[in-house]
Amino acid sequence: MVMHPEHGCVGYFSLLTDSINLKPNKELKQKWESKGIRFNALPALKIGRLATHKDHEGKGIGRTMIANILLAVLTSIIPKAGCRYITVDALPNAVQWYEQLKFKKLEKAKEHQHNVAMYLDLEELFTAFINKIKETVGDQGHASTGHPPFYYP
Ligand SMILES: CC(C)(COP(=O)(O)OP(=O)(O)OC[C@H]1O[C@@H](n2cnc3c(N)ncnc32)[C@H](O)[C@@H]1OP(=O)(O)O)[C@@H](O)C(=O)NCCC(=O)NCCS
Image 1 (cartoon, helix red, strand yellow):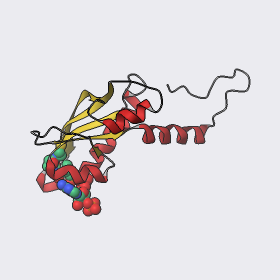
Image 2 (cartoon, rainbow, N blue to C red; image 1 turned 60 degrees about the vertical axis):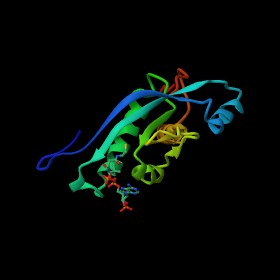
Image 3 (spheres, helix red, strand yellow; image 1 turned 90 degrees about the vertical axis):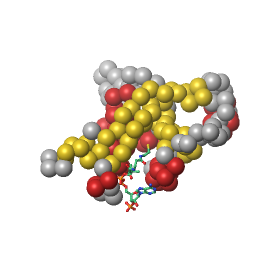
Image 4 (cartoon, rainbow, N blue to C red; image 1 turned 180 degrees about the vertical axis):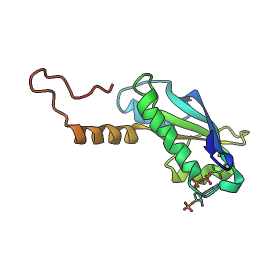
């Protein structure tokens, strides 16, 4: 929950573990197969519910919640458990909002589903995050021990 000292709860989100089934998502499946990796599904973290209080929309609270989710994934989840994607079953009127945040629609969303299945690939973000750290602290092992400056799987 995002709490404001005067207004109380101005936003909230919930997260749950998830996976993307690659079978119906040919583009993603081909991407992995081109690297010689034949997985049926890939690990993800799902945004279950995310909303900003009506009176406080358009103040950046939604984006801040997404930023906090991404930061938590990069720093707390990925170092401990595999997670390649963020997923969300977006309400139809929020699809464009997620698209602005680089989420893409999953292929072949079920016809009867009201919500639109979307995903964000964490690769680019994670690589940029690690490269920035390396750029800051250097990528060379310690001169006497050869130990790298940090370990990030
Ligand atoms: C979608 C939602 C989470 C956005 O939250 P927010 O706190 O208003 O978002 P932010 O303030 O971070 O972003 C606002 C920007 O997104 C744009 N935006 C807001 N809602 C949008 C929508 N539904 N579609 C496209 N753009 C949208 C605004 O125009 C604004 O753009 P600007 O910065 O260029 O002016 C909020 O409107 C909401 O809770 N909606 C109802 C529940 C919902 O749809 N949840 C998401 C589905 S899981």
